Amino acid sequence: MKAVIIGAGMGGTSAGIALRQLGHEVEIYEQVTENRPVGAAISVWSNGVKCLNHLGLEAETAALGGIVDSMSYIDAFTGETMCRFSMAPLIDEVGQRPYPIARAELQLMLMNAFGHDEIRFGKKMVAVHDGPDGATVEFADGTTAQGDVVIAADGARSLARDHVLGHAVERRYAGYVNFNGLVPIDEEIGPATEWTTYVGDSRRVSVMPVAGNRFYFFFDVTMPEGVPFERGTAREVLAEEFAGWAPGVQKLIETLDPATTNRVEILDIDPFHTWVRGRVALLGDAAHNTTPDIGQGGCSAMEDAIALQFAFRDHPDDLHAALATYEASRTERAADLVLRARKRCDVTHGKDPEATAAWYEELRSEDGTNVIRGIVGNIVGGPLT
Ligand code: FAD
Image (tube, rainbow, N blue to C red; front, side):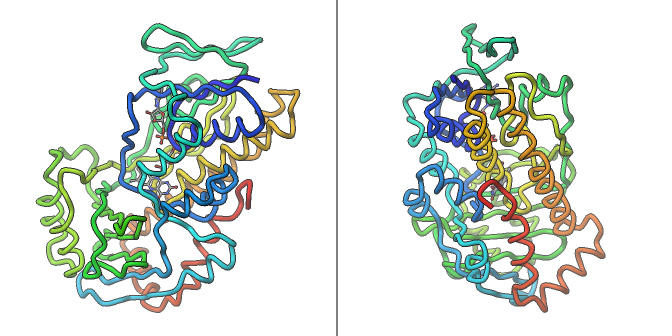
């Protein structure tokens, strides 16, 4: 079988490696000309790490991952610790440590594992056609690619999704903007092996370690969609938005590099359950675009890749049965994660201010049990459980 994969994000590259593990021929096409992902880092939760391990990347992943031994929530204004607890119960329960990883490094690791030079960069898909004997992708440069199957891992703004669903889908603004980047670890901001989150006023500021003695940081700022922003002005904007916040937050604002700080409006898509049309299948954000509030979008994309592998392994001679199995095994799980993230997003960002205030109160008496139960609930349920 020959698979044509569109998109060399973490979904497309994982799928490429996974299908090759079965011995299939795979071509990956990517519209950009080099590896320059949007966003500084991501937390790869235990389910995502298990997928990477399954792809043969256990040692590489561990080498890129930050060590998070504990979590804490800090009152935004007083700087008082609301709760602090160990991650050990979570790691014990699910059998795998999570790893925050710099996004460009994660992406490069996956690209190298597939074969960086084999990825066809600068190839923008402009149309996909399905036929009885194969599917064809057209690129903006006038060339085409043909395969027995097309795996569309073309991200949140997927073009292939319109083809699979037969109509365009509206993305939904989640009500906040996320600023993110990397800074050297600084204990004035947070302990070196802790995921520290400052909360207050329906906003949050977080740091967590990645390899190389760096913190991945992000600020969530609730604001209307479409507020103009000039790249390079993050320090001024954040200093104003977070005036009066605790000293650790002020130190982070002073330390960050405005030139490399990203700003992303957060959107998601209502879950849908049709991921396959003929020989074209959606994978990753193309199929389930989520807010990042439970850190599961990329993990879910990697779960898709493993589920796709299992489906083709179990139906080696029937491509349509394999794709139907893939779809059936993933849509409910992915939808659950999108809706869990949306719920978490609403509580964190003050959709109902009373619910947000109640959450802050809960955090003051939290011993880790409830938070870890919630995270374990997100982690379990994928192809590698
Ligand atoms: P993408 O990474 O978007 O890759 C799609 C690729 O397809 C891109 O390279 C794009 O250039 C290419 N492409 C698109 N259209 C075409 C075309 N027409 N032709 C050719 N190529 C095309 N997830 C987590 O698991 N943990 C986290 O902590 C986390 N944090 C996040 C924080 C933020 C602020 C955001 C915005 C997201 C976060 N996510 C997180 C989600 C995660 O980034 C995505 O779920 C993940 O990147 C999806 O991977 P993907 O391969 O499906 O899509």
